[in-house]
Length: 331
Image 1 (spheres, rainbow, N blue to C red):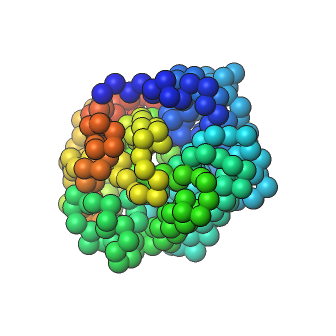
Image 2 (image 1 turned 180 degrees about the vertical axis):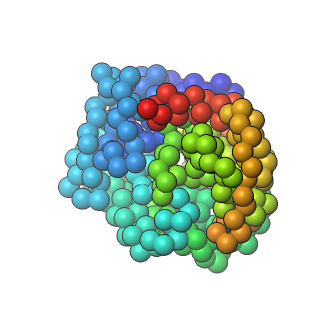
Image 3 (image 1 turned 90 degrees about the vertical axis):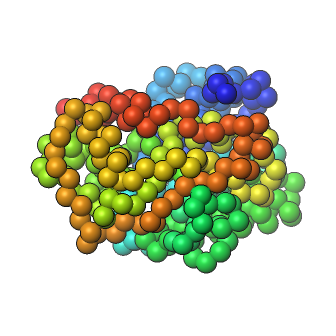
């Protein structure tokens, strides 16, 4: 399946909250190419206007903090579709030591945008959740039904509960109003335009930065035996686009795949792409999160006619990401 948005989006009025972020900027590109009238709302705390600079003449960009309800109302008015990618997203250490902040800010960003969209008559709303809603002992590959069992994984508890509550609110709004809320659960996204902050980055950008900065050895959190699937941000964005068009409301859908790699293997792939060979130090005193995480995408494939968000290989994605980092982050 080629990643070209359908003619469905031509002349649709669409707001992308968080549209200057990694995934949001790719989503915005797809929508613009399909002929949509796009408004991007972002406070640029994690996203960057550089990510959407080539699109600025084709979109409306509004710098707003959507934790304020009046701002959420202003970016949802006269829109047919709203994608809510606005979120506070950080790394595992910040998540586990700032649980209250992660819960509070993500609840505000979800409920403000969702309720504002409902109030002003948006037709269809995409609530972007996360695989962090799943419990530590979730079945792997993980079906969507696991999302309401137990508690979210402890290192992401505040963030995970906020996202669960966002899903629940989306379900109730769908049942009680005329707005249809589609719920998507992306798995580990990465790619060019990722965040490389020391406290806010995820595993691929964190390791890439350490290696390129010449660390020796390179500290890797956990045993290295924990397994993940890594999904390129373009694949995540395109999956969201397909689900926004086709998915039934109030029924969560995974956006990921089941081709897991261990963090040890990931480290090897990154060093190979970068042409570097520093020794890793696996720090087992630090948290490593889920022992394994992969997506059951039976539902995704059924809804989308077979789309699997794995069209960009891990090696190619990391190579693209490294080129972007060298161009934009190394002075």
